[in-house]
Length: 202
Image 1 (cartoon, rainbow, N blue to C red):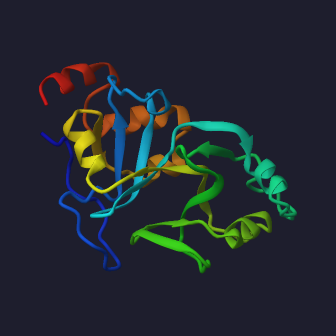
Image 2 (cartoon, rainbow, N blue to C red; image 1 turned 180 degrees about the vertical axis):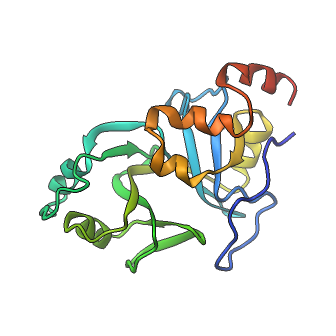
Image 3 (spheres, rainbow, N blue to C red; image 1 turned 90 degrees about the horizontal axis):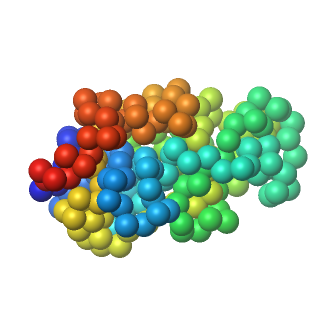
C-alpha cells in the first residue's frame, strides 16, 4: 500500500506522467529506513516522472552558512541580509553543487518549476543575486540532492521506507529546521513515534 495523499499544487508545464506523481510532496523517512543518511529526514520532491525522482532534504543543516558558501564560490557579498542563513545537506548526489528552492520565481538561467508557487534553481546567477540582496525573498539553499531511478521511489514506498504527505510550503520557509519533520507529521495527525504502528498496518 502506498501511503500518500493528493497533490497540493497544480502543474504549470508539461512533463512525462509517472504512475504515481509525488512532485510537491514531502517524504518522511520511516523508522526502519535502512540508509542512515536518510534517518529522520524530511525530503521535498521537486520532480517525479517515469524517469525517476529528484528531491531535496530540507531538515538537515550543515556547518555552513550562505555567506560561507558564497565565499567558497568566489561571489562577493554586497548585502548581508541572508548570509547567516544555514545551508542544507540536500542529499548524496552532486554534493558540490548548489540547489536553491525559492519563491517568488524570478528570471534565472536554470530553473525548474516545481509547481505554480515554488521553483528550484541551480544556476550561479541566483547566488549572485542573493549576495547582492536582489534574490528571491524566500530561499532554502542546499548542497546536493536525493535522486531515484525509474520506479525506484515507488518500490521503496511500497516497502514502507517512506511516508508521503502533501508539502506545506510554509514549513520550508517559516518553520525552523529542527521542527520541520514534526510539522509535516502534524499534517497527518500523528507523531514520529507512531510511525512503527503505521508501517505495521501498511
